[in-house]
Length: 477
Image (cartoon, rainbow, N blue to C red; front, top):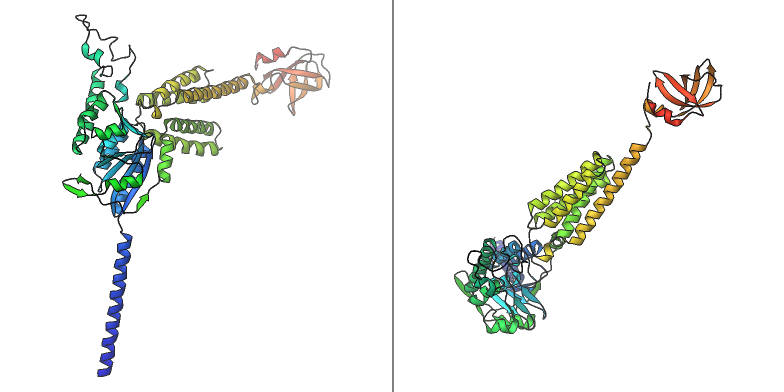
């Protein structure tokens, strides 16, 4: 019995030792799995809904992984204000320091890019890059005579010149522009003060559309450092301290692995769909597909493709700053075209639909950012396509109107008939594959070809083959 107890005790010790060894191996594997890293991604092109989605995904990944910093390599001409503000909020609420790096040489962080650079915990630029020109587009360069802008800088009451307006050509010309400018200036100044950067120049970038090269930006304390490449950036950032909420942390990232995050499939699709030209084309394809489906019930393919395209088009438009008056005009234009297809008005409704569609497409996206405006070329092409479809519909309508009836009593009028039996102005004729009783001229003979001139009940009124066909249009008698 004592021997059995010793063997059981030995077996328990062996099992405990094995579990301890497995636990230590598991801890080592876990430690290896949660190794610190730096997330790195590239942002290029206009700032829009797809950019917001990509930035949100990267920062969310930094929350789920053991990440020490996030690097955004930026090259943008600007973009939508709403998208820019969403990105700024994501950066300010990020769980780790965000480094924005304007690169490669020749890149720029203009307009919205300047705000994003100022919002970042570390702002860096590569040699040969620039930033600035952060003035809201809508307040600058308006031609004389536009609503809200005086034709000149002369005071109407006393005839004196307003010095402020003449000294600053980019000064806001109306109350709405002034509000937009002041709001933008306050935003970028608050971002500059948050990270201890040059707030005065930041405000001048908004009010006077100033720009700086990378070297000038470093000299004026607009950015924190210059780096020729990513390796140099990681080395120069190492050891710097930044404020994260109420705490100050020191970056130690020079020896950490860098994980590059590419734009996901969903983001790429959103990037394509958020192009207003693509959105408009999809929406119109959807509308035409549904029109053809209702015109030819049972075709199925036009209806399915049209429903998918229309849904994608409306989803894409929902991501953009819509002008609902423009969308309403497009809807009105489409309604007129549909009405023309089903209730022909010989072009009146169709022409009105084309005009309404063209005006609505021009007004569709409420922004002055060129990358997010509908192309005039596309508007012209879509109007031309709509006109072509309208011409086809009109041609079909006119041909249908001129075509002889194919059913009912009217179908018989003017039809050729062959006399079967005839006597005293009455007899039987063969017409449209049937034997009919008929009345007409007294001198007809069997085998002669005659025309149906009218119908009285079940009796046809016929005339000789030498009669005028126009008589056949007198109607049923």
